[in-house]
Image (cartoon, rainbow, N blue to C red; front, side):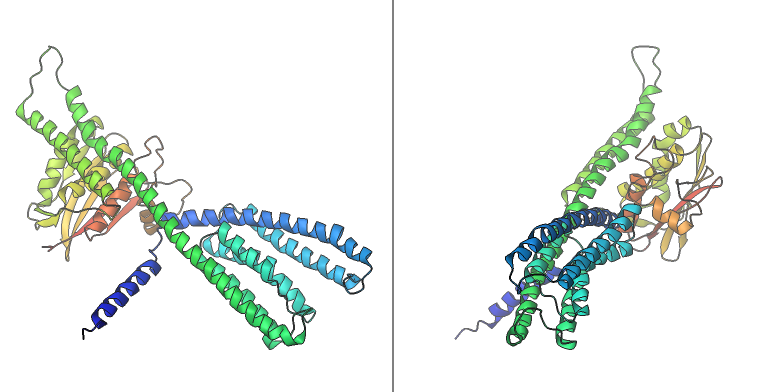
Length: 467
């Protein structure tokens, strides 16, 4: 007899892997978290306004239609007493007050932190569901509104389909409060016979648990899809900007070489050095295009690296030759102090050149003519420490006074962060973000030190000893 245990084990292992893969959620990026906070704030305003309108309609129907109809019926069992009418008025007024306070908070503050948004979310949920339950407990009863609560939480899940844990907490608070009222304080369900109250409570718990579970699972899966779509859209924008950003420098260098050619006669003589530099620039453009396309076609899996053993000084010297037209146009100088005896490093030369290109281009763009740029590197432990320094005006960001070096690093290398020169939107925005991605893909770190009026030093590290 052939045992089926291996097949069963493999099937179980495969099923377990699929479940784990579907449950494991990627860490959201900072850009996504900022977008999510704005999304929650806007949706909270919308759902609070809709709830106020809905409560207004219910209040109008209760006071203007249902209550008079019950009075005209003449049936004592269904007629509302003065106490009952006062109870309904107090209930609606408390809900209106709670919703209004939350709406005022959202309208007065244009930006709220995640903690404030969380409490605004709980405040809204509490105004709709917790306040009525507390009011029933004050008169010795437990509120049970199976249909209303189901509609509310499903509506909340549809309009605010993020932060499933917030939804779960608000649901758990409601169930916990109901259980406290019924099981601990022994407050029964008003209007129900004693014999069926416990079965009704069990039915309520089961139905609510199923409803909440479906809603929370839907929120969790939808937010994962939303997060993935957001990141892909951000990466697509990054790809499109990177194409224009990275191709700008070699195209500008080649164009300036052509413009500086003598034009006194119809024929122009080129020496071999200039032809070689133009060929090298065009080849680099082709490599950049291939590199960018490779990043895009790999479904945003990160920066692809094709490591080679290189001498850092040779790579920098070759790059400086291409930058000479731009440097001369800016009436600036570039001094290379990189020692020739540095250890050989295994890096992607094209990607590392992009780092230097971006940093030098930013320095030339954001400073006045006459800038002095210094490139240096030394060995620090198991890393090669590289610096690009200038004696320019330093980095400044609007509305960011008293900025520490740590916060400056976080701000400058963030995606789409820009300096004060808004005429060049691709500089100090996407370029330095790309630099950070490249250096971190190599296993290094990147940072900046800058003081207004005293210049800027960008630094990054590259690990030594990689095979």
